[in-house]
Length: 234
Image (cartoon, rainbow, N blue to C red; front, side, top):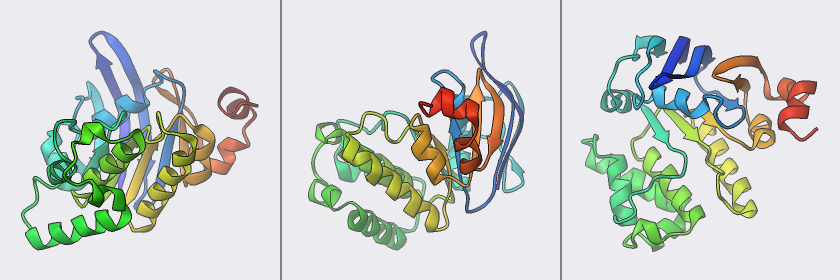
């Protein structure tokens, strides 16, 4: 469904991603693990059109989207749930969710999808008129996920969804992501909690200094001595 071939990305003169190649098949949940600065978030930004690639190709359902705008990529069915949630703090919960579907023109389906979000996250319905910036971290994460789903995506990019959450909310967040995958939405997940990500995924890539250094199933990477020592606490 998604294929990256020889991707290179720069921030100014700094090479953040180097000759990166990976595949995500339809219906899979694939994770990228690695230390801070390894190029994980940069990879997601390149896929969603936020950061242009300097070279290489990104294919989605066989179409080359390497130079496509973020708007076009969203229209193709790729949603990005960014690191740090990035809700619009001075807009209400309802307005944030409306922003998730601003490119759609199917009001009946939008209303149905909105009710689905409220069924999944009842607290958002309760607080639909509240300013998003006044929500707790966990509630903002629910809102960020809901906003992404309001675009009715085929493919969702999750960037550090458990970052800054209380321990009791981390499992809830991963359960939600698993449910999304089970509803025929393909997922590419970046996550510092490597153990949880590997337990959840179908396939995993280890990124180090902008390059893929290891790949395999989640179980294979969990069983790898180097991964266990460097990323899973031994």
